[in-house]
Length: 295
Length: 295
Image (cartoon, rainbow over all chains, first blue to last red):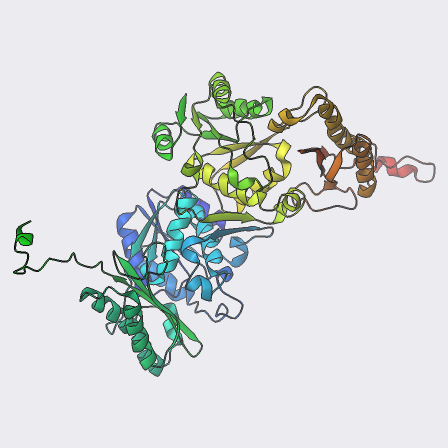
């Protein structure tokens, strides 16, 4: 496994690397969610490349950039065990050298939810992802559904700038109790971890109600809020939205996505689940309209 | 020559195209300046590709988007004569399909001059150039020095997003009287055309003074202003700046660039020239220090 810390080292490694190149962009602190992405990149590509970069421009001033976990030796060992070919782990000045002046702004899917609660966050994400995908010459790039809005922003970015890369998404990996894996879960006390389960429970509640036939979105959202508020979590948002544009919906008519962000003290967690499209209504046979059944 | 009007047609053409691919992005209304770029792209690449797209997002609301010349049949004939392989001339909805949501913002070299006088212009340029270079799979892209600030913005964009393309610049092509070729010169009346010559004359004046040893930038700028004001042109800016950052300078110490934008009625013209770095001062032999000459 080659560990490249500069663009020059990365280019040397890439010049000998067979195509296709599958890239997993991460901020390190790798957990089973990342490893699922890495395994898939490994299986589907001739070269498997992981980037580890805690990107300062996607953190807001008051956020956890400086305390974000950086267990680099452990991360490298996990990559090695997963048969990764190249790890690119640049220092900040290699990603943002003197004179760097570009920001990629993706509106549309970035506007609401995380975009509202973390203004500027997605500019940082879009800019670093565009740069990383080009630097690594990615043919495919792997993103988790855990950061669902980020995934839609990246898809939009890649389509709009016509980046020559396929975006592959993988399902969120969860602990057996339902908690979505996150590098930020290490911030949770044991008690908070228990409380935090209410977030995924709320999302499952909405999915379950929808499956049972409930099509009214405000009803689904109220049910989610109740679950989360009972657990004493503060809600940033808890909504059922269009799965691509992430715009609010009033009524479930096709596929949708339930998204939530909650706070426990200084810790902020996000999660999401697919909401299945309503099943086509089978007209029930009645005495009044017997012909309908066979029509 | 293949004329591709959609991304699908372009991809079909590109799938059979040998590398390297040299791309000349234009807004059409081709003149000898474009043809110089095209000839060079033709000579240096296995595939020569010209894009013709009058990009709405780089025009300000009051500008000449709707009346910008669009002699497409003549442009295609000129490309054919220049042995171009592929022309990509998409309609607006092919470049900005429904849901398009991305803007590339390059600060730094875009901040001043055109950036100040045409706010938002370079966002439009950077976004369309990033998209076009990726869509056309450009290995090299050719830009004229006529739009000198645009050239520096594109260089910054390509470096920052790590786009896999070499930017090649070509000297401004001029009429024998010095007027820089521009698709907008067709807007000039005969009398205005005569007046317009003062812009290139002013730039040559600054270059000449610098060559003669003048190092004080305010002096160079005052000389340029005098030439242009005598001709009755209105000045948007007329400056000598750092050739990469385009920041103002006080004293000529290395290479620099003279930039100007002037208005004649509703027509706005820009031009620029390199200002040579001051020659190293040769110590003049004197009776007091005879040893210096041979040291």
